[in-house]
Image (cartoon, one colour):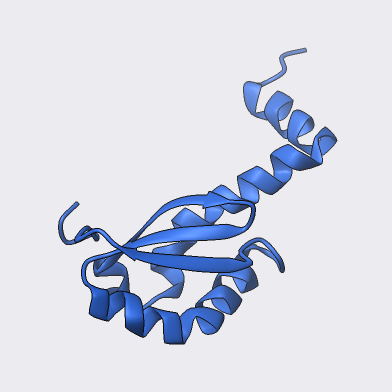
Length: 102
């Protein structure tokens, strides 16, 4: 009987809740573009997530300010795709980087 690496990894993740949590947190990067309008996603880039706090780089302070007003809606959209409580907060910081400059 052949066991695939994917099956082994899935089994390990199911046995270790902390792995499952980290995997779900990392999925927030992949759904970012899917849940936001293209003009927002072009001017932002998720950089990391730690303990449910998603850190997002923005191209300008105007984008960071605007997104702070939309934060609860963005969190709801992401958690709607990944499950409640995956993203608890978002911290927007200006780096001048977004998808436009990537």
